[in-house]
Image 1: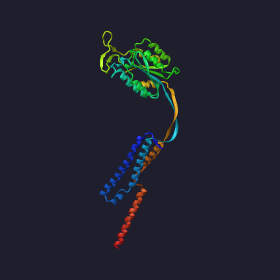
Image 2: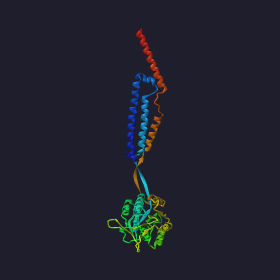
Image 3: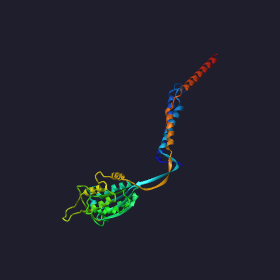
Image 4: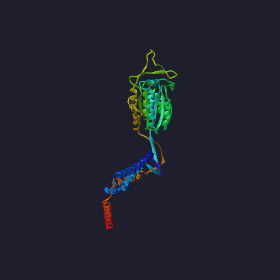
Length: 358
């Protein structure tokens, strides 16, 4: 049974019969045009070297070359073979800040929505690796343990929000410690923590948590989804409508700004890299993670079919060269032979006329 790796090219084979029809139509039109302008008996005499048969054969060879080239492009396969595979990857935990300050809109449409959008793109690229999700504010919680199912991780990521955080605030140390609990302590490499936040840490024990991450050989990649200009923190009512902005004890609107100092220290201490929202993308972070050493995450075998496109490619090349090298004119021997026959017919006609006259 033949299988096709790129079956879309098979549709292009419809070009071949269309080309054949056009070639035949053109040949008939040419013959009819000459017949209307010249006596049909004179056509062969005026064009003794041209051969309709050779012209047709040349066209058929070139169309055949095109057909086999398209078949080769469709990558035919037949004959089974056993293939071995070995998967490699890393363990990645994404810790997403779900504090109320992530609702600020200095990053459009909001810090939290933009972060989720970029992380969803990152998760698509991490498919096949082990992925875990942690949500944090004043406390941290495991939303999804390490899994190779990127789609499942995206579902847990999507439901994270400030409403599900019972303790307000932002505590990096809690996020780091909960993330570390998901990694295997036996492994010395292959571990990354992506900490997505607006950078406002209210904890006093983050330095110790950073050291624990470094000791566990976990590389931390902090990503700041906020700006230095800052933005007020909106409050929404039960219907999701904006009711007011967060205020301090003096009644002044609180401006939430990015504080990147601790995030930079975090990245430097663990061998990670700090990134700002400006110019950030999931693909860029994926490139950083892809440079890390990878571990074997599974192996096995599967049955595949042998690629046979080479055979069709050889036939296509042979037909193309044959068609390219073929002339649509008859050889000198055919021309001389035709002239001899024509002269013989003329002589016979003259003899018959002389005999009739006698």
